[in-house]
Image: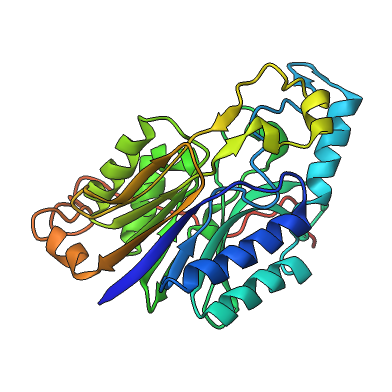
Length: 312
């Protein structure tokens, strides 16, 4: 089976949920018109990856202005389900394509005071098929986002292949990758905020290790895209004009680039995936099959939802 896929390297409308959703839906239509049956957007595309922001935080202290910045971030995050998420689903339905988009998800299950870095999966029927919450935010991300659990290590069996993925530096977690390999992932999604050249080695390694297609997706962001009041409040005036270079790419199971990497501009990457390459790639290396040693190694994954409290 062959499927055309697309990676969208675009910039968020920072801290503006409505504008981000509008841009997402417009791009879904534009990219689907080019024949894409799976479209991937970057990490935390809605309402933004807050690169460069401190939220007024140092060890042992938080400022009131930083709390207000986080409140604005919280107010522009996504509840699931909501009118905003339903709007994205409707765009996927109209385009008749699978869509995966990185969002900041507002917790609606308990206190509503926690945010998660989440990847949402929509089907061509417009339904939300699943989600993945980032298991371990990195560095200062831990101040603004909570930790996901094993219940959202999602791999979906779709008409575009078995789709799943991890977010940014989760992809450096070998056991998290193995959890997806065990579920038979064929099209591995890796939305990120990492624009370093060396990140390309990670994308290619995953493709070779998992014998799967890898879609890496990042934003291209400049300082002039930030709201002026945010630049002033967070002291970003000294930052370079290019805040994030991008680096999106599509990689084959043999570790070869099918598209990209794309740097220093917004753009769309398209590639035709022949899913038979996944099978051929496992002829000489199948990390959870003939190349595994279950008599020596064993991976146990806790996929139960984690609750912060229980009631008798």
